[in-house]
Length: 193
Ligand code: AMP
Image 1: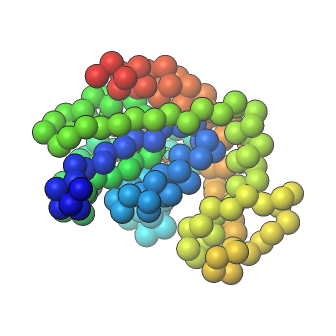
Image 2 (image 1 turned 90 degrees about the horizontal axis):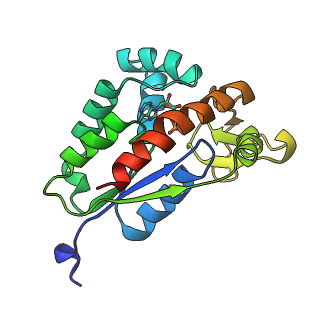
């Protein structure tokens, strides 16, 4: 099929922290030449840039809680109206609540099919996996380190750091929030459509 007539691919990747939704989203987007959107990355960029949004989000992220729906919906709505998503997109980290799922349905009206996949991994595996997860300060590459030994990114040599919300107690809180707000509520909402 001609590239210009190809239908857009719109995909949502859901999953608990550490499930690999970011990794899969990046690979999928690359393979299909479409844009990857991560609401977590958008918020972390705002934290880094110390914007008003970033300062507000940091406290919430570091508590393992969710940023309010209105704000997240506004961010995603704005992002999905830009011209670079016409060929489709893969989004991870959104929706996380029923209100976000409902809004995404509204945003998608007249824009083709929206596919949703959920990656499921047992909680104890996630806790172990996130303990080994490090992010490159320089290029954002995500790496798994054996017993915290590696300190440098294999791709660019930048320093590998632990995300401030990847400590065990916060991860357990994020898993609890995912089970309550996303898994039992938002996923059933999305799949009814
Ligand atoms: P993530 O990188 O997807 O694990 O997101 C990191 C953190 O950003 C989450 O634990 C939330 O605090 C916040 N966050 C990201 N996406 C959303 C969203 N759709 N709704 C509310 N909070 C979000």
